[in-house]
Image (cartoon, rainbow over all chains, first blue to last red; front, side, top):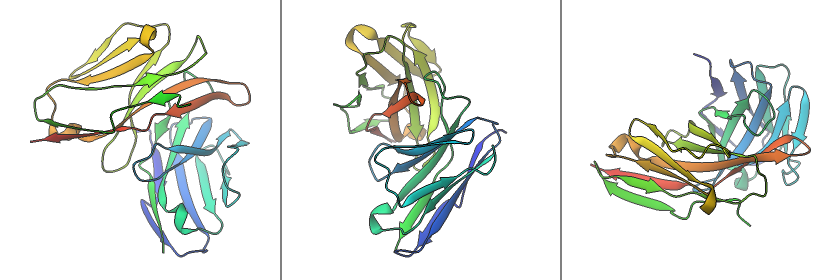
Length: 114
Length: 117
């Protein structure tokens, strides 16, 4: 089945220790998104890639970076995680960058910062 | 201002009851899209439905139905004969055009539904 896969499902890191979250997709979609979702809140868009074009949201902290080496994979790097970065991180994809396009989500990676 | 409002934070119903989740949105666009997603405890956001602004027909899919009313800017979701497996957080979302990136997705704050056996 075509899908969005996120690894790992749970990640524990230490305060200030860099961490990388992974997302892959078999949908062959052009757009990949990273969202942060804190407890009882809506997902918040951090950034997205349209092909190789990177689009950062204005309020995304510099601590968060992303890489997309090819169509299938996208990574979220947190350079120096703080306690406030503990959250669920959701990856999503869509075929194109257009308002009618549905976003399909992966199962998420729950990040715990000690 | 909130683009998508889900006023009901938490709802509890007894199994087999019907339940309606409210969603009110705000946009100046004439062409836009509305979505509902389900987020079970496992965390994955599951796509349920997409509706464009020109199609006000109600839609039914099994026990799920959606009522879209442009006059009141609402896109409500009803679950008939609720089941325990319906327990989840439900998000309504609006997608409208954005000049720089093509589109902008706005999520509501979600409604947590608990179905009690």
